[in-house]
Image (tube, rainbow, N blue to C red):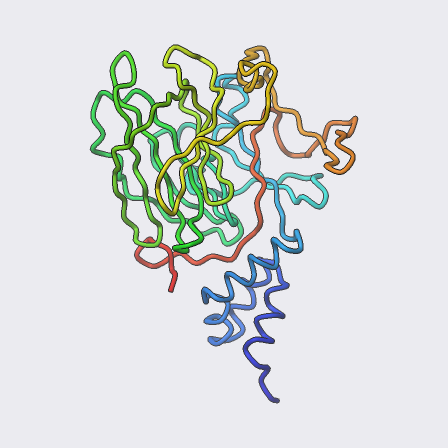
Length: 312
């Protein structure tokens, strides 16, 4: 029987879920090689994004100041298909058997950056159950660390996933700021001293969007409320301030972090076209109350044998 051309095989396989791809890798060496190729990985992710398929909601207890410790779930992480959001399934993540809590720093293209109480960081693919532990590039930090804010995202220009650690040094106040940038592709990091006239009131992690990691900050060291957004460009490794829409009261930007009486996060469906939220709260069975979440695609991505990103 004649073999199908490679591009047709790629097109067919790119329509499958990660779970199915894991099985198809066992069909033949050629299928295994094709599925693990960087070309196929990008095609599969692109199709998932374009068709809004293979979407999951990843949920965990959120160690934030507004949540009581009973909402931390003892490091448990759950997944629920976005198609239904009916049942949550507990996931076996890299820090599941470690003592203490597990924090989700951020997610990107199916990868999740996790951090435990021991300050270990792992990049984890829940779909393939693979992970890579990051080298402790922060181990030489001095004692006068004032605040640390982490971030994670994808540098599309260099085809590289990066973990960013924003570090502000000082004793009673911030004296200077440095940034650690870890590259998954090279499995290496470097530290940069930056001109950063901003202050982070708390060790909040950043949010990745459009090639940048975004942090909430203030330009007044006495403020407890962050009312500005700064973005770190993962390609140029430079900061810039993000213009905000007109706000009547700039002190109410972070309402959810101001009200200490909040004890759970509530989840609702929201119609972007009609700009209305559903009346009923979404209930995901099998998941405890008090949660934080990340929305991401299941993705096929291969970690290198040396611990880095298996890119070409």
